[in-house]
Amino acid sequence: MILLIDNFDGRMREFYKYITNICSDLIVVRNDEMCCDDILAMNPNGIIIGSGVGEVKDTGVCSDIIEAVLGKIPLLCIDLGAEILAEHIGCQFTKSPNENYSCFMAIDNTSPLFKEVPSAIRCTANIKRRVASPHFCTENVTFTARDEYDRYLAFEDREKNAFGICAYPVFFGEDGEKIMRNFVRISERNV
Image 1 (cartoon, rainbow, N blue to C red):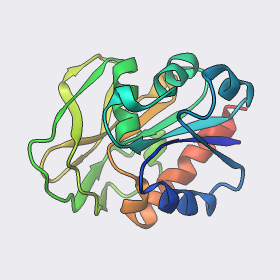
Image 2 (image 1 turned 30 degrees about the vertical axis):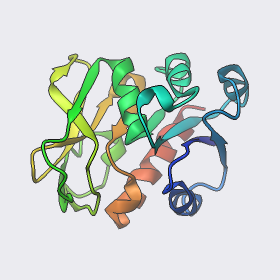
Image 3 (image 1 turned 120 degrees about the vertical axis):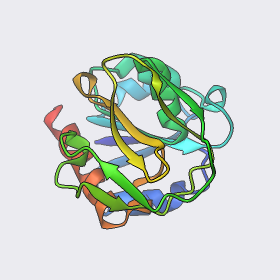
Image 4 (image 1 turned 180 degrees about the vertical axis):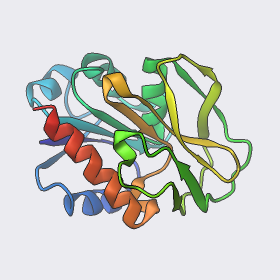
C-alpha cells in the first residue's frame, strides 16, 4: 500500500486521479487527520508527501513522518513536500531565480526514480516557489533533474530511498507516469 499525504493542495484531486491509474492500493490522509504513530501503524510500503500551500511549518505531521521513516520506507516528496524532505537529508532550498514555466528537464537516468525515462523530458510546471540549491547540500544528496533555467528540480538520497521533486509528475506527461511507476516498484521492493 502507498500512503499519500495531502497538504491541502488544490492539485491533489488531479494527482490522485493520475496516480490511481498506476497504483490501485492507495490511501490518502490529510496532514492533520492522523498522528504519526497512527500513520506508521498502517505499515505503508511507500509514502508520497504532496505539495501544499504555505510554508514547511504548515504541513502538519509531515516532518514527523519523514523523520520516523527516513531510510526505512521509500519516500517521494513533491514540491512543498520536497522542501520538508530537504531539511531532513541535509539540503537547502532557495528562492527560484525566476518564475518561468519549465519546458524541459534534463534527467539523471542512473536514479531508480528516473529509470527508463528519457534523459530530456518535457515539463509544463510553473516553478514559482523554491528550488533545491546545490551549494547547500550534504554529500549524500544527488541532484537528478534540472530545467533549462539551470534550476535543480529533483534530488535524492539513494541510500535512504528518499526522492524529492519540485513539481507534480502529472506535469511531465507520459514520462511522469514512468516516474510514478518507478516509485511504486521501489516501494514494492521494500516489502
